[in-house]
Image (cartoon, rainbow, N blue to C red; front, side):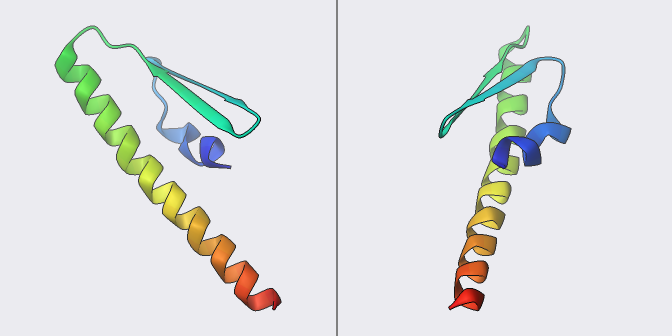
Length: 65
């Protein structure tokens, strides 16, 4: 679910694979500044997606009990 949520943010320099309960993203950029900016953006988006998923899971659990 997290990988799908982050897919629109991917650039040509990024590749994500998902296997079992593990998500691996590889970022290749020609400069360290570009790498830093790309990874920073990606981590912010990942944090938002993770918090959203956690909130929805908690909400669904609370409404079903």
